[in-house]
Amino acid sequence: MKLSVYHIAEADNWPSIERDGLLSAQALFERAGARPEDCAAVEKHRAVRAVLSDGTVIRDQSPMPPSALKPCLRGLTPTQWYRLLNGKVFFWFDEDRVGRHLHACRRTAQIVLTIDAEALLARHAARASVAPFNTGNARRKPAVRGRATFVPWMTWRASGWRSESDGLGTSLRSKSHKPAELTIDHAVPDILDFVVARREVTAAN
Image (cartoon, rainbow, N blue to C red; front, side):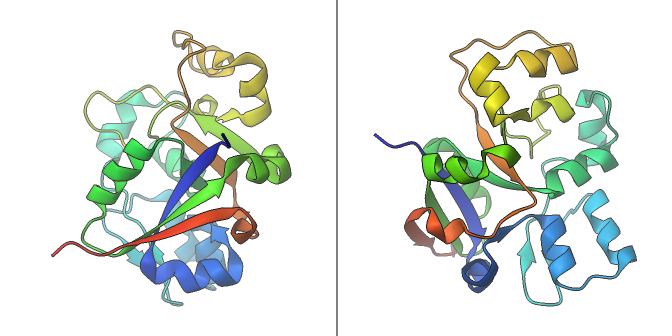
């Protein structure tokens, strides 16, 4: 059975995805022609979703305000954490997490892409990392996090979560602890090459 991962996007962004693939928040700001001072938005907390000048939607970051992030960050400020996350494209490994994410985004129409992870990683492994939890949430006893939270794919294949524990000073996770997220740095312009299914989810009334 092939390994699959999942990406959830605002339905309004589908024309952008067809044209340019999946872009990180930072890449979306840059593509929209944002001024340098506007691009600083990738270092700030987005309490509400943003609509760029080209119509592209960027999700809010309401589950991780600075006040919630500060106690759980190691070696980074909230500003640096936002910039780190805004430079990545995110995929879920677990369909249960997809369901929870869709529930959180239920007020607007969404698209769920099922991705052939093996093919994606065959082409983009050098820019791929995995994370052991939902890095976009800092509520309810948030996990300790920092740059080492994102373990390069090939490193994880070789030594599991060792680099995370070494980098953050936390207990080593067991080998059976599966990644929650797969990330690719900056963009996946050829994402349509790896899409095996596309599902539209209407907004809740």
